[in-house]
Amino acid sequence: MANKSKRSEAANQLIAEARQHQTEREKTYRGQALKLFPWVCGRCAREFTHSNLSELTVHHKDHDHDNNPSDGSNWELLCLYCHDNEHQKYEQTRFGEHHALQNKSHESTYNPFANLNEILKNKD
Image 1 (cartoon, rainbow, N blue to C red):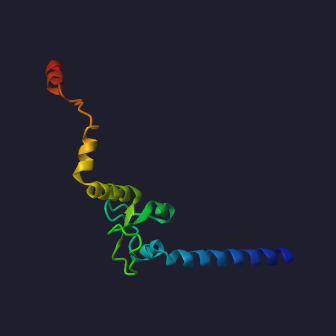
Image 2 (cartoon, one colour):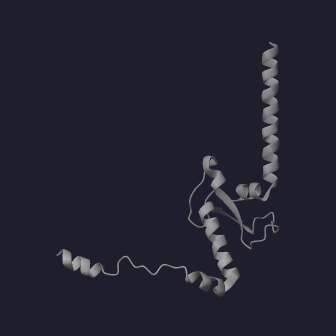
Image 3 (cartoon, one colour):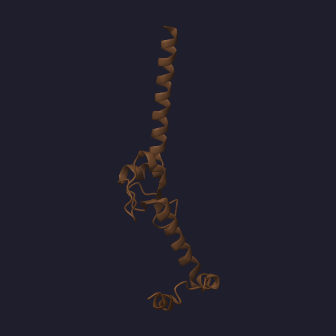
């Protein structure tokens, strides 16, 4: 009988801790955003469930992580891929054309389809 009481007490403590963690999570802007918005990426419309929710991020539209109005007006939910893409676009804009021109020299000039017409003509 004492073992049952100990198990019950341990289970109650575990449940209380889980509820406390949930309350703390809900106070964060991520927790607030997940309550406000549907669990769908704002760019690619990928839907999320509890099992893959860790792949859904909160993006700050103005890129200021300290700007967290409780109405969620500065947040949007994005999947990991769209979030990375959004930040990449922001960095390109932030550094301007000079940075983009520097990276152009590293682009490939190889064209795998350059003589495709000749190959197709010879095949006939």
